[in-house]
Image 1 (cartoon, one colour):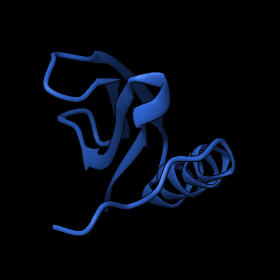
Image 2: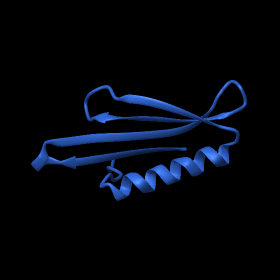
Image 3: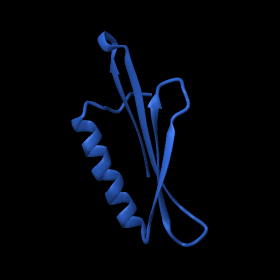
Length: 77
């Protein structure tokens, strides 16, 4: 499961992205990989580890809801 969100405010010269993906790792756990920063530049990365896929997906959904409240939205491809 993955999500890509953007927040653009031209009047403030703001163009940011937030990407999240849930993937299995080699140790039988699940990883929520998050990357964020300015569009067009390398971002910061954080990885959170979970015992099962359900917990990782729940964390992704909660973070996505929080980011949407802060003005991030899904950009059409």
